[in-house]
Structures are given as structure tokens and as C-alpha cells.
Length: 294
Image 1: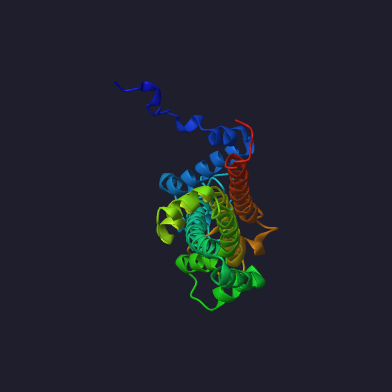
Image 2 (image 1 turned 90 degrees about the vertical axis):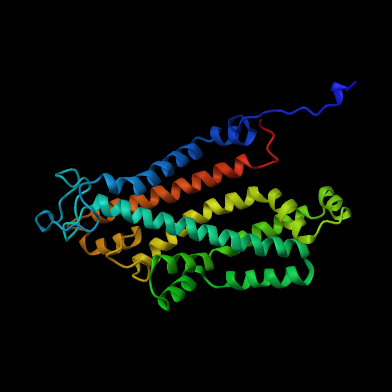
């Protein structure tokens, strides 16, 4: 006869009942940031299909039309192109650059960090000195140098931002793995004869995902800012392909005549970056295992 008292008890905990999710939902700024990013992403990817004008449609009779004063919702630029259509298409490109550069930099930084943290010794010292060498160069100048010697395109800008953004992730992961590698569960896994690759990617990496997720979220915000920065200076994505950065670049000479050409993209960049930072702060609190709050 089976002793039911020894049978494993399976507890079905829905995702919204998880402590981390509840802690995240209590952070109003994090929830607000999540809602804003969802709405902004949906607007950028769906909105252009709902508008009457495309980002390249020229209406010379409506040049410098102000916002909310005609058929062009957010006004027009010096060529009469609809600013709303260009802003949403630019957001699609800027968000994709931010997301994919975050993905590349996080993958590479996590790989360097987990190898350095797991092996330590000479291997870890060499890898972390490589990280220090990259950090010694000012990121903005390194970014501009790389952008100046390459052909501007969305793909190239994504790669350049990823190359200059992986070091912080590597440091976070290395520190986390170094503190985890001496834990009892790792020692137990070693005694079972598991390979180093299994220990790194099946045991250590899942336990280091909290800091990685937080760092990745903040990297998106940084990547959007960097793309806007180099595009504003003329080394990034080139017209007629719009991005939030080159919209600001094209608007700077019309600040007095048509200030909305700079104000609207600037506010959009601020909204996106601030929202991602709010999400990162909320995730940091929600994934903090030291938190005593339920």
C-alpha cells in the first residue's frame, strides 16, 4: 500500500501569482513603462499600415504643416512628408536596432562572463583584462570611429552598438558566476561527473538569469540612445530611411520655423528610453532573491 504522505506534492502556481511578478506589478513606474513600450511598439509596427500617407509620400502643398491642423496628424517636414508616418517607421527601425544589438551584446557578454567566472585563474584574468581594455576606450568615440569607417546601414549600426555594449554584461555575469561556482549544488554536480559545459550552461547560467535580464533591458535603452546619437551626427542610418536620430538631424535647422520637427522625435526617444529604464528597475527589484516581501 502506497504511503500517500511520501508522494510528491505538485503545486500549480500561475505565473501571475509568482512572487517576482507580484513585486514587479507593485512597482507602478515599471508597469507604466511596460504598458508604454507595448503601446509604442504596437504603434510603430501596426500604425504605418493604418495611415493615409507613407513615410516617403511628398506633399509640397503641405510643407511645414503644424500638428493637429490638417490631414497630417503630427504635421509635415520641409518636403511635405507626414511626420507621424516617418516617426512610426523611424521607431520601427530604432527599436529593432535597440533590440537586436541588445540580443547580440547580451549573448556575447554572457558567454565571456560565464567562461571567465567559471574557470577563473589565468583564463578569467585574460578575459576580464580584455573587458577592461574595451572599457578603457570612451564608448562614444569608439562608436563614432567604427561608424565612420563602415557603410551606414541598420545592420551595421546594430553590430557596431553590440560591439561597444557587451562589456557591462560580461562584468555582471562574471561576478554572479564567480559567487555561484562554489555553491553546494555545483559541488554536487561536479561529484556526479558532469562536464564543464553542462555545469556552465545548465546549472550556472539559469541561476544567473536575473542580473542578465536586468542588464539586457537597460542595454536596449542605451542602444536606442546610441543609435539616435550617431544618426544625429550623420554617421548612422541615412535618409531617406528614417530613424529617430536622423529625424533630429534633419530638424535642427528648422528649430525656429518648425520646432515640432525636433520636439516630437525628442519626446519619443525620451519616452522609450525612460520606459525601458523603469522596466529595468522593476525587474531588478522583482528578481532580487534577497527581498523579504512576498
